[in-house]
Length: 327
Image (cartoon, rainbow, N blue to C red; front, side):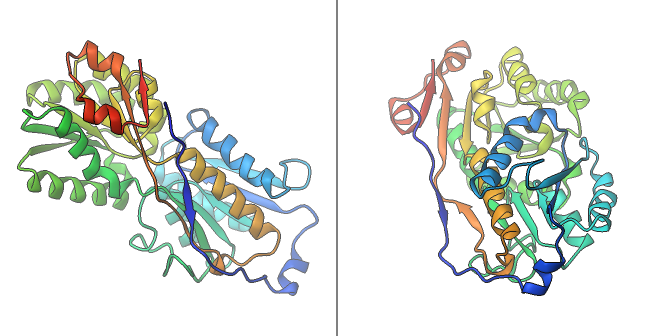
C-alpha cells in the first residue's frame, strides 16, 4: 500500500508586484518553460506542472502561452535558450532542472524564475533564504541530493555483507553532480564501504558502466538524481536485472519498471507546486516573498518480485517501513 507524501509550505506573506510592472504585461502572459532533458521522458512531470498552473486558473492556449525549450540532454544549449526567453520578454521562466535554473539565473535578474530542483536552493545560490527568497527566484525543492546517503544506507541494510558499492552519476550535471558525489563518498567512508563513482553522460555509456560493475565486483548500485536517469529509468531497471545488480534510485518509476528499490520525494508533486507558483506570480505575487517549498516526507518503494529474482530476502522490518511494495 502506498502512502501519499505531503509537502510543507513555509508560512510567509506574499507581496504584489508594482502596478506599473503588471500594466506592461501583455494581454496573454507568456511562460518560458526550460528543461535540460527531452520532452517525451518528462511527459508526466510536464502534465503535473500544467495541472498546478491550471489550479490557479491558467490554461495553455486560453489565457496563457507557454514557450518550451528542451535541451535534449545537451547542457551547453541552455544558456542560449535562457537568453532567447529573455529576448522574447516572457512573463515568468519555469526552470525545471538544476542546470536550467543556473542558466535562467545567469540570463536575467528581473524576470521571475520558478524552479523545480533536486538540491538545497540556498547552497546552490538560487535563493538567499528559504522563507524569504529575495530577488526574482523561488520554487520547489525535492532535496534529492541530501537523500543520497539515505539510499546508500537502505541498500546496505538490504545487503549487510556487501562491502563494495557503486554510485552512478552524470558528470555533465556539473555542480549538481559534484555535490552528490561528495555526499556519497562521505557517507561511504562513515559506513566503511568502498564506493566506486561511475560516470554516464548518455544511454550509450550504460553498457560500459555495467561492465565496470562486474569487473569491480560491486555488491550494490545507487543511481544519482539527474535528467538522463529519469528518462532512462526503464532501460536501467532492465540492465540491473539482466546483470543481477541490486540497485536503488530516487524515482518510484524505476522500481515500478522492475528496479529493486526507490527512495525519494514525489517529483510530480514538486512540478505541480512549481506550476502553482508560476500561476501565482502571473496573478501578481512577488517571488521574493513566496517561500521555497521543500519536500518533508519521502517514500520507500520495494519491488518484491525483483528481490525474489535476485535471491534477496527483504527483512520484515524493512517491509513494514515501505510505503509501497510491488509484487
